[in-house]
Length: 275
Image (tube, rainbow, N blue to C red; front, side, top):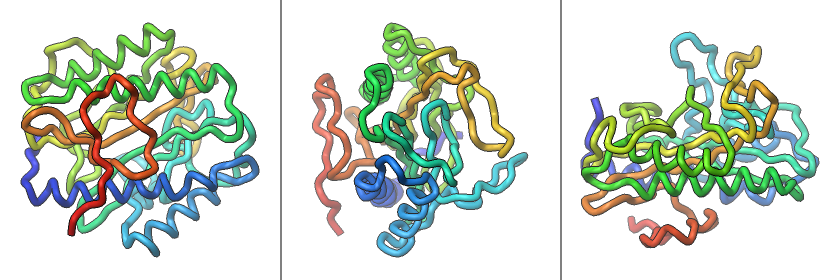
């Protein structure tokens, strides 16, 4: 059942999502060669709890069949597709890393992720990351009342495959609100005009994962970390999006977020929230 959010829900989601994005702004200068993913996680965790007064949603998150997730963030480096557990891994020049942040504020979940270059990336890595970013925004651009979830997946799939990349199919975007994961599932591939129709008040994430090689994945022994099976690079970006009466509103906005691509003509607000 897909929930339609009330005006009160939307107000709460705007706050939680903005706070999640601001964690990514805050951590940006710390992501450089020589730092460990565990240190990145510690800095984020302290900022969430001590500065924002938010709760890191991943910490001890435990879906059926899983062991509790042990950290506050997910740090996915190079061939890690998603859910990389922070630890002793030292970031080195040329690495690419996805940092996935979900915070809880006043019962609402805000979820977003960004790619970071550690030092100077290779041309191949830079192209993968930039194409994935465009894919996310092409998906977002489909969002309006009367459109379908299949329209989002199709726009992402066409652009990714045209660039020579594959799309991970085992993981997808999701509804979000007072729960971390709600209906609907938002696939990053598909056919136009299929799946659920979008209605004002729906809130969900769009978070495509693109692999430089084949789409197949493998799960590591910790029960969480997902890598590309062929060890090729993987990239992901994520925003949380609201379906409005006329189109979309990106909720995970912040002053330091990367600018939308030139093909996004709708203004994306990063103005401070009013009390």
